[in-house]
Length: 144
Image (tube, rainbow, N blue to C red; front, side):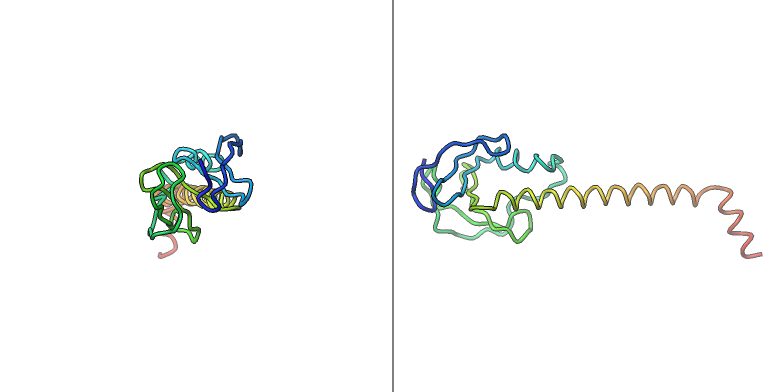
């Protein structure tokens, strides 16, 4: 399989415990569909909370290293990161450094979700405190 950027042969390597196809010339990497999910799961493994992967697609000049068809670019999960993918679901092309950006974005998402759940939990506790008889008695006393 050859690199869609520089047409050099891709080499298999381990990246964060995932076997990926990498280009030693341009330093990009090819991730099969499930490998992108595995990469994201290294920092945020709640798939049901991640949202849509592919948003706003448009053509690119790159060809899929598996099937040779023209790939598309997309905005990764509504962020300003543009990745390339094969519409035949063969995988994703990540240019040099984009794999690190994916991890950063997933870390941010994990922090946002943890904060959201913490805020919701605190709000529920506040509502429960407001429902206590003692609170209402104090509130009534303020208006007497």
